[in-house]
Amino acid sequence: MSLVELLPSIQALPRSEKFLLVQELVAELAQEEGLAEGEYPVWSPYDAHEAAATLLQLLEQDKVEAA
Amino acid sequence: MIEPACFPFVDADPTQPRVSLTPLMALTLTHGKREVAVPGLLDTGASVNVLPYSIGEQLGFVWERQRTAIVLSGNLARLQARGIVVSATVASFAPVRLAFAWTQTDNIRLILGQANFFMEFDVCFFRARTEFEVKPKTAG
Image 1 (spheres, rainbow over the protein chains, first blue to last red):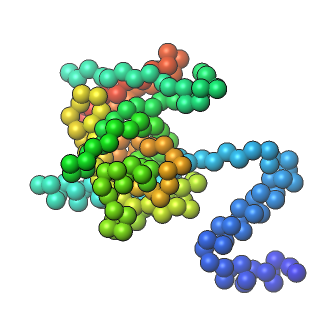
Image 2 (image 1 turned 45 degrees about the horizontal axis):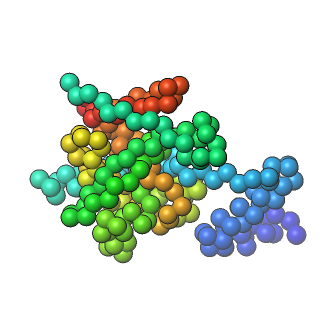
């Protein structure tokens, strides 16, 4: 089965299953490259600028409500 | 002029002394009548402050009542988060309002990031002498 045939099925998957699929593929590729010896999660929210903007809006609301 | 408070880097993993030295700082969070003292990780690369789930609960927040959804990045992206605002006290400085992305996990430290911890405090890291200084912002 080719990627072109698979793509519509992949696109129909729920968001959570798309994440799982990506993780599965990355793990498989890492194993092939000999990089699968450990897991190094990065919990820090780097480049989460949209999240920062939302929190700053929330702080503004908080300031208005406190006034 | 306000004198900075000085904190030591802490070995986050006692089995890995020196290499696991981490800028952890005690702070007190307050919401209503509830108060929680907790160590926070000063993370200059983090875009936002992040609060572990149980700390939010201890402060009296109820997940279902928080309406501001926050989309995070990295490993946190797969978890839901809500925006909340609390008062935070560092050392003997006056309390400030900090906004947090409250996440549905306890598998993280409390993270102090750019929005808005580093907007409220000036921080100098002296890693070679394993300490850092914090004081309220002087401009802006």
